[in-house]
Length: 148
Image 1 (cartoon, one colour):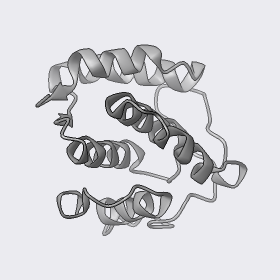
Image 2 (cartoon, rainbow, N blue to C red):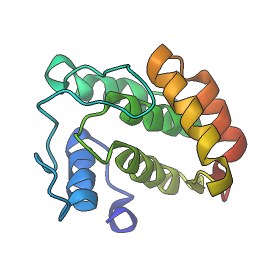
Image 3 (tube, rainbow, N blue to C red):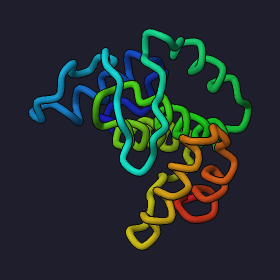
Image 4 (cartoon, rainbow, N blue to C red):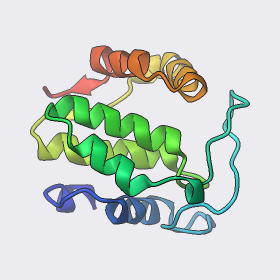
């Protein structure tokens, strides 16, 4: 899906479609729609707001105004991860949507090396708890960009 649609504009409907594609057949409801209940995240007591309390369209619009394509993609990746828009599949959605934008901008892809997955999850949990994405973005920049 991503490779056949990488040229399309990014909006929240596109993000929902990615969720629908990656989670179909997994008994996840609502599929391709924002979650309607709270969620827990392994490794932290932090809980994201309900989607009904958020304006994802406005947040996405602000991110997309960033003039630096790479920084914009890293911000996008972080935003989708922390928003926890869906009951399940948020990290996969964030990865695919961010990589769609990476490909669109000729920037390669974001890929967390297997040997760094633990370090990545530590940075991600710290970001969830503090809302400071600087260390996570630096980690991604230093370790997870491929093809630039």
